[in-house]
Length: 112
Picture 1: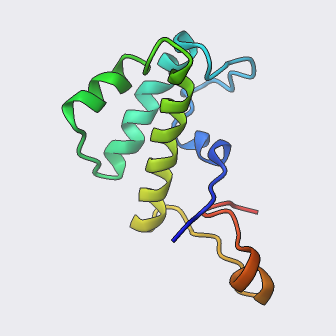
Picture 2: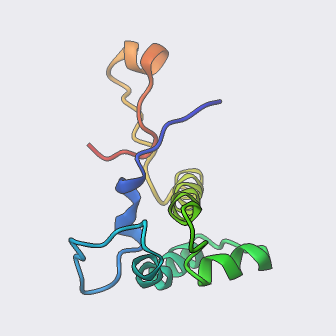
């Protein structure tokens, strides 16, 4: 099975409390670090058990280099998929459009 997700849809689950941070960039490790507490709270609410090495990288804001933003997005995407499978995020499948449901597909978990 292949699925598409829209990662920005899931940022709301781990946004730093009390901020809208309109000028943050996932490319900057310092900015990603402000999101880590919320990301860890979200993972905890999903009963995620971390591999120690992965948890260390998450806590460090991921890699300082160019891969850091991809690592951040990968973890967000994985938590989103866990949320859909666990039922805390609706899958969002469009039951009323046969072409979308059988041919084109939809963005998993996307609230419209």
